[in-house]
Length: 372
Image 1 (cartoon, rainbow, N blue to C red):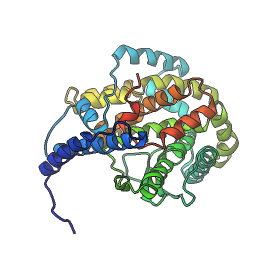
Image 2: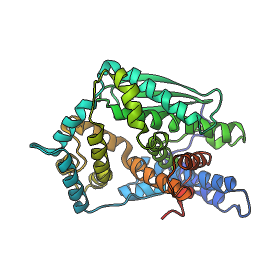
Image 3: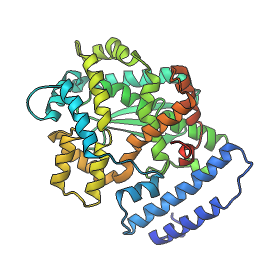
Image 4: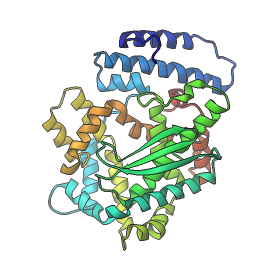
């Protein structure tokens, strides 16, 4: 039963007033966790107000939306930046035909047969969990279920169930590749979403009784840290050549694949990292009405290397999640900057320690406030 239901305008005004009241509380001299808690509550209320206004008909530009809801704005790069990156990719996969088709053709050697996807993903998640437990203390009762699903705009999703229990779903309508195994296992599982959610639940809801951690709002400032730490997690869990060694020794046999060209794949991955913001640039211009669908398709095909089979999924994700997509790319950059500030030498143990520290705090934009 709903008690005293409010309309969207009332929710927006009430959240704005409450956020201002929270920010007016003097927390100077208090422990750092309380300072972060204040910003966590206030920033989430401000985000709620913005989302309510949008649901009530207010319109914001892509950058305004990302600032109001997530606390940050993704950088924009000139076309020349992407043109230069494409030259590097062209050199790695030379030949005739569209570049996106050549990249896709190269990646086909890494494609996991559909009947083997579940076994591969399960083994990868368990390895990510084992590596995480060597460096982080998770709730003793935590666990997850893995499900194969279809018909969704995302490739995988973690549904935190509370009490350190999680549901990880993998979309089967899209191809799954070898590298997706460890990336997905770390991002959705350990030390990514499931581990992070379990820690927040234990540390703040169970141990401190902070009721704001009884919910995990999707369109909120914590999205930046959730997605950013999830994407960065694989680099911490599998430093150096350890990922390729695990894929070679454990995942290839499970996938039923004989051999692959890891050396070229690593070069291609490094080059394509330079076009990571191309999708955000497309969403910014498309959702703001500067580009029509044809112009947007042309951009994401050329600069984000989105093939024709993925076009509809891209537009579906952009329409549903809008500025949320900054959280993956910009979020990873901010998490990396946080970790690198704490561990400038980039040694593996130091990266684990820095990431564990980040995941022990309330996920709030204040954590990144003093990063360049």
